[in-house]
Length: 296
Image 1 (spheres, helix red, strand yellow):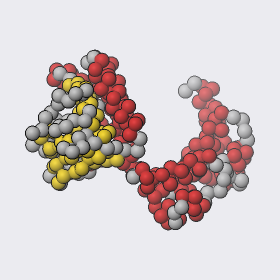
Image 2 (image 1 turned 90 degrees about the vertical axis):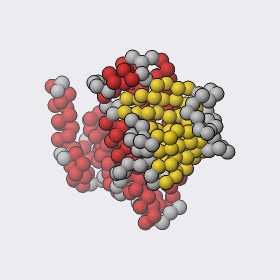
Image 3 (image 1 turned 45 degrees about the vertical axis):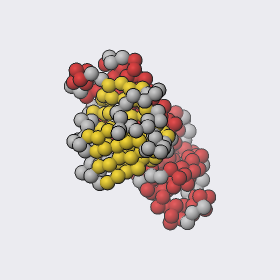
Image 4 (image 1 turned 180 degrees about the vertical axis):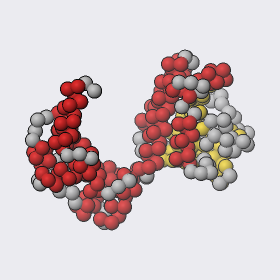
């Protein structure tokens, strides 16, 4: 027999229906609203069955133990450090593992921002999905913050703060899904740090791959999967961001700015800058100064 709640040490908040109805009609909470939130520690025999799904998106973050979810596509296992995302209106049954019951933070979300995140993460037609998390401590802290806010009161400012924190939770889960498996992504993270710390150094995919202990082709594929682009383009974007900062905050000559970010040839620097920002470095500096002078 599965039980819905009542676990020692649990925390649970559910907004009244009239509060939800008012919150989804206007303001920031019309985009994203946390309607229910809680924390169930070592929730033995926990489970729910919803033949027609829930009215909102369900997010369950397993911080310890294990659980499972059954839906049309079969049975999914949920382990510590993973998020179970269940789209609204999708029939499902979930529960805690009998031998190793899960400890979970959970949220119920309404609004188009939640729907958009689910469509991005769960595909179409939407089905429950289990996702890995790169920083479980940060995610736990943010979900706890949502619960703390709902425990405070049900005023509009509090609901807006809870929605903002929930949006951060969705963003973290979405970004982690895009970045892929955290262990496979570690070589990419290290390469990104090296590129940021050595902007002026020549970019060598082969050298970065050697540092990561991977073949150049394997490393390049991992990097593209994690960032959406190649190493050279990523480095160029980093360099141009730093160049913009120097052009705005200093009077350093344009040629010296280019050399600072790795371009010995001023003309080549100008072409690369134009390819990103649509104007020359000199024009970029001039336009920024004009905006500052006019206060526009």
